Image 1: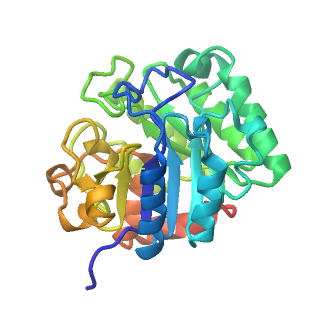
Image 2: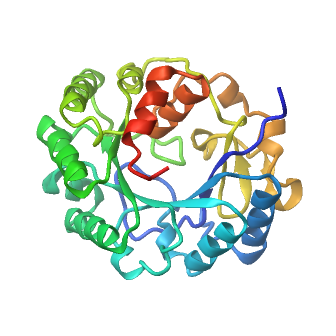
Image 3: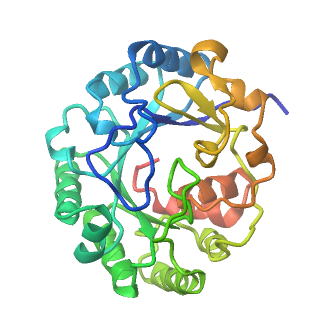
Length: 316
């Protein structure tokens, strides 16, 4: 086999955010926006190492003043760009997003459940963002996090929204620790309730097969949360993460709990692929819906591969 290399990169271009979501602890480190030296080096390294896709995230990436320029430069370097957003700023940032291959929006249930998790009015903002992206012609998808507040009607509402707007949804659990930290998360779901809800997603998958991005194989993996569930891992093999300061991590789960593998300004992009972090080598706790699907595909699972081509609607 040849050396491992970064096909996919998750780049936190800012830790600033215009929401204070229950699940998230990002933004406490005061890293702010990625600055010019880091931006220039990431783009240079992405081109040199033939990165296929970079997902811009945060924080809220639409707050970064150079967002449009970053997308344009990455495209010029031959890199496909996707963006993960809470949706609030999407209608006013469509020109900056024009070069993105797709936008992922967070939607955690019906209006009451989503607004309780993300803030008053956030549900309507997501629908407005979905409508604006559809009109502008930018593919969209949804990420839905299941918490202790989620019920069957929330799952159904999200799937129906996904089908209505042509924006397929990926489900995953709200983890027992807040993103980017080791702090406990009191809104994590009860495991038995979570498994029942995932079983309901599997039932809905039969009725809305193209509206749900998770494969049945991936959903059955998620049903094992929070118990150990080994899976082929692409972190440090095909995937890595970069924070606003340029620190490198093999996987997002190691950010906030482990020292970085390196910093792109000193080590370049390849550090996570030459020094796989301990947590990734021993990990049996992969619960990000789309990361589970990617790991199953890296393991050449036929169910995940077939599901990928059936559900993408042009968004990759």
